[in-house]
Image (cartoon, rainbow, N blue to C red; front, side, top):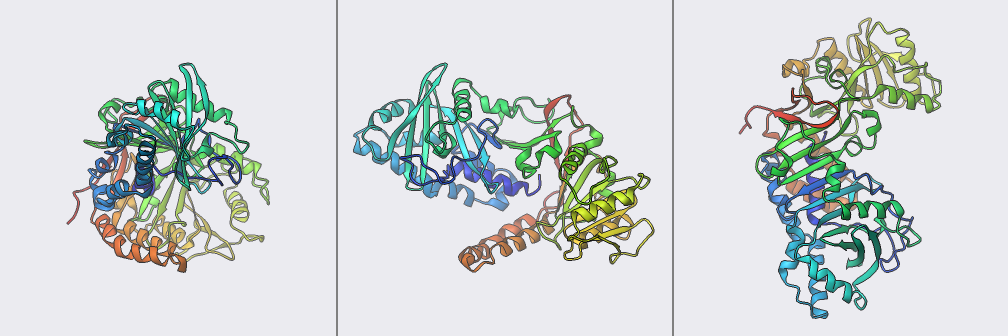
Amino acid sequence: MRRIWIVTGTVVTVAAAALAYQLGKHWKDYHYVGGRLKVDMSQPDALIRTTSLSRLPRDLLRVPIAKDVLTEDLAFYYEQNEDRMGLNGAIKRIAYEHELDWQDKLYASIFNEPAEVAFWRDGKGALRHYAVVMRRGVFTKALEEAAKVALKDGQLKKAGDISTDKGNALVLALEVNPRRTLLLISQGDRMVVLSDPGLLFDESNSMVKEARAAVTNWLEHDGALSKQFDLDNIVSSAAPPADTARHTLALGAPTMALGYGAFVSGFKGMRFDFGGDWSTSVWLDSNKLTSAQLLDPALWTAAPANPSACVVMPVDWAMVNQVLKEASAKPNLPEQALASLSGPGLACWYRESNLYSPVFIAKLPANTANRDTTLQAMATWAIASGEQAAPGKGKTKAKPDQKFWRNANSKATLAASADFVVFSPDGGLVEKVIDTIARSNPSVADQSPGTQNTLGMITPRPLSEMAQREVYAALSNPDDASFLDAAKTHLPARMKALASYPPIRLELSKTQASGKAWQKVDWISKEKSN
């Protein structure tokens, strides 16, 4: 949920630009450095369902905050992207050299058809690999002709066949440029486009069994990817029916949790439906997540006011405890060390810190047996530098129930006060939370009453300040000088637009559902300030 619009913009840009990531030496031989791409084709990390890929960026810009922050540059980037233009050039060259009657509408149809676009993360966690599933439409005749010229064209080659219940599916490899190769797989009235041959082929040039099975499923069953994300199982009052939304973007929990989805087992993902009106929903499994595990208004009384962003984390503490037990911690943690932790956690970012140092807040009742011993063991294992971590005091006015553990060589701090446990790589944020618990600072609950159903909060002004500072810091390397200059030219206006918005609170709809279903999230804020 954090950095929600940045993630949204990134995913849509990748989809609209039809970027292809080539990991390897030469597409003609299907040899790849390091073997095939390490993705599970049967488990996409994100999905876009759209009535038209070409309309996707401009329809996204109809969402007010996206229009102000992303601006028309998003649409221009899509329309003028080098890879998209390269694909257009490849199609025109093949048609010209082989005297094929392919008109410009053929290229346009690729982007105008209804489609499902699945994404997978690469080794760096970016949603770089993708598959597009669509109906062939006016592309049908063109693909039949392409199969014939593939035997004598240097840019288009036959790469294999896939057997399906509906017949044989032809696999063609289209070299867009020396660094970009797409796989086009067609059968009947459906077509699959893969961003990289390494999604389907392994390092020995053979089709990966699991990947072939996934592609076969997409070709044989209409809407197979949408069913994997359960897109049509929406609580009645949660969001517009899927067939009325022009575009739906869904992000799975593993992607949003940066790979730690197993620790939030009841949370499955988040989606945005837009085109006319727009809406947001979360994918929850009530069999694994009760309201008490998801919502706890008391946490907001401990969070200092004016965060850049805060998000509730429905942590599965039993799973966390199991991982700690198997981690061979030294010193060994007490049996069931986290068993007394209850309810969700809260992660918050503040402008005075940085993106990589949020503060985490959780509940651990003060009357828990052996509480201090457990915390001492956790602190020694988690933040000490090979030495016993000693309790200490921060800048706060110490009270009997306030306890601190610090790393001797960094700012990492664990603290406890009242019924709360607090941790952050930035000890200053921990002290700020402890002061808030002691009522020396105002809290989010003071600032925004009515947090009973709050899942998250964004305060655009401090968020924009932190985001701009973090971007500049990320481009501080001398090799990034040109990118830094571009950021200093364009970013301030974007961040100023973002800062003009009032605080935004994300609230879970009171209409609940049993089992696994999409449930509405309302964006609550005052009118945009001038």
